[in-house]
Amino acid sequence: MSTKIISLVSIGAHPTSGRPRRAEQDARAVELGLQLAGDNLQVLHAGDIGEPALRAYLGMGLTQMHVLEQPSGADALPALTDYLRDAGAQVVLTGSQAETGEGSGMLPFLLAEGLGWPLVVGLAQVESINDGSALVLQALPRGQRRRLKVRLPFLATVDNAAPKPRQSAYGPARRGVLQAKDVEVVDDELLAVSTLQPAKPRPKRLKVIKAKSGADRMKAATAKASGGGGQVLKGMTAEAGAEAILKLLIEEGVVR
Image 1 (cartoon, rainbow, N blue to C red):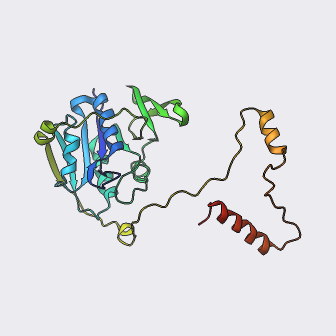
Image 2 (cartoon, one colour):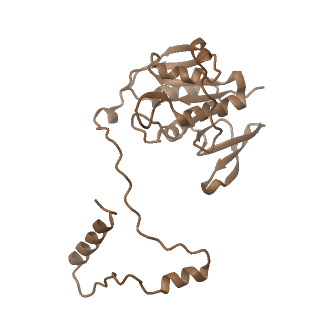
């Protein structure tokens, strides 16, 4: 019996021009799905079926894509949850964060919670699927991998550790079929009252002395400050001390 695998995709945005495109991480979810299921992979999108960027996924070799039709301001979570609950999927793959919209990265977690499924974050590879469970590799920092055994069905997010997606070909992209499915539209109340704006740069990190051994760390901790710019606050009120600390954080660029 073959394992039914579904890859969820969204509309991405070019980082420079902002033009619609296939989302990078979602394309990796499709690539991983194709390696596991081949032509039996099902790709699912919740949104506007008329979006031209969807055909970039079809250009990866798909013959069709299922689209849960809903306007841009609708909440995709209820429609996806209801569909996946009845789809009989055993593995659902998705990117870790959308490139457009809220981009909170919460959708996979909320989907897994609503379905009652395990969630694997940072899936790099599926080694095997047997006897109602899968053996997978999870990506960890610095190129490390962790082998996990997870029961079916499960949902997994992929990021840049997953296989690089193949290029999208024009011919298959034109020939592929977008199959629409009518679903109940639920307005996204949070998005309706929110204001989207470019993310602010992360605050500057304070200088941290890196040491490889315990002796080096002890030396760094006990050494006197070389710059002579340190200040010891004594006999001050809590308010005055807080103002001095805040002033330093502003000067260092940690607080703006």
